[in-house]
Length: 202
Image (cartoon, rainbow, N blue to C red; front, side, top):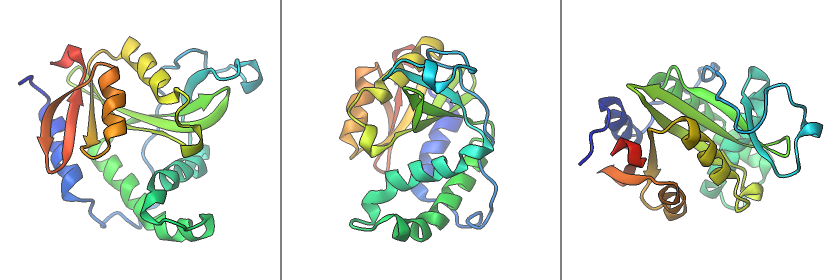
């Protein structure tokens, strides 16, 4: 079995043991630093981006509402039938706990906004350690899935981050297939979660 970093395995264990509610009321957010753009320079305006082009830009404090929207969209399945007015109060504490947990586990995580044709459609968060990059989160809004956005992001990341790991829920078969198509394989498993790594990390 290939070697993976102790922090990566610890992160897998922490993920499945649950999130502490100690930081649920903490208004701070994850420290945001830029990820390398995929196809364009940081100063390119939306009007100059070709339709459908997938790019990244650094997330800032002004993106907090969009980060909440992406989280709410990803968790919508937990409250079937609920509309936006009902989702916000229900998922607000979970979002704060999620942000606090991610900040504690990945204090130097780098978050970027995923753009399609210049419009925000998702987020990607990376954490570097010991020559490896852990893909903490890659999320695309439900209405923009199935258009190759996540694949474009992964292709760009693999071009500059050859040693990648990611944690995936074992029942999320769609995500597993996506990562497998990009060269990831399962290298560890615990309590229903899989740690996957790229070929360069095996």
